[in-house]
Image 1: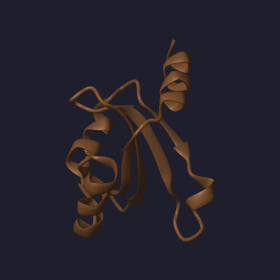
Image 2 (image 1 turned 180 degrees about the vertical axis):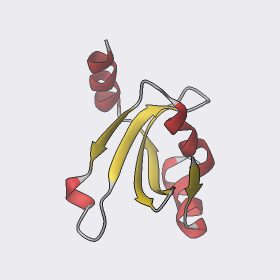
Image 3 (image 1 turned 135 degrees about the vertical axis):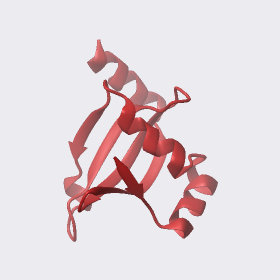
Image 4 (image 1 turned 120 degrees about the vertical axis):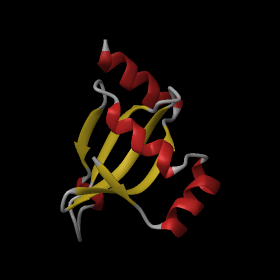
Length: 92
């Protein structure tokens, strides 16, 4: 799997959410992760949200789109406590 992202957006994401896009890309290795279509943000292109654990075992949500054979990361953030509970309950 190949990843790409906007460097300025990646730098802002670290400041705003404390997650690097390099770490966010590892959530796609989580076989137990889940993907959902992001209807709210899919006006100009289809977007998806991947939820899962990174290699450092952080539970995060990653907004992304597919461009050709690459995954373009748009944003990434830790789950809120409520989202975390729901994800873990659904995962049981």
